[in-house]
Image (tube, rainbow, N blue to C red; front, top):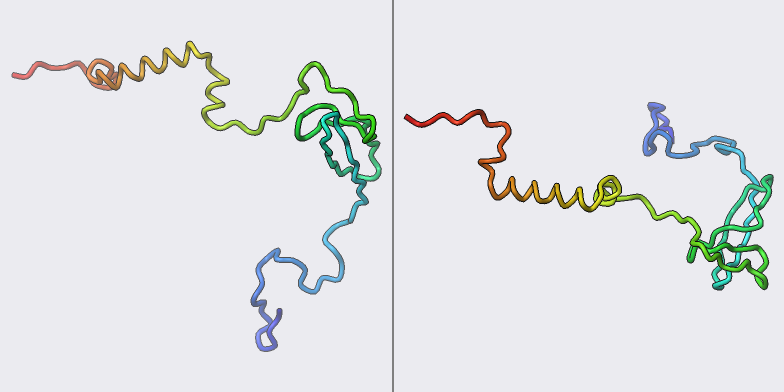
Length: 132
């Protein structure tokens, strides 16, 4: 909103949205929403752009089994587990993926030895001098 006196903008911020712009900020794309049905009775909704070829099967987002577009004839569940997204790892999961349990146990034993006997494990201290 422009004020009459100074012509400065007040009450808005940069990029806040259309401030008197006659046109939209982009093109609208036609979308197609496809419903997929799995053998366990779950329904998955997937939006596609209208120009793309819709795949006949998709993974169910609940049980990760194959799902088809025909509700009365879904594809049978696979005997092998379908690959699925497990989410992003936290720090502990990342460390566990890099080290085996045996390596983790060795690191834990070393850490406990440092905690219990810090005088023996201090690598930064110089040689001890006898007190006179």
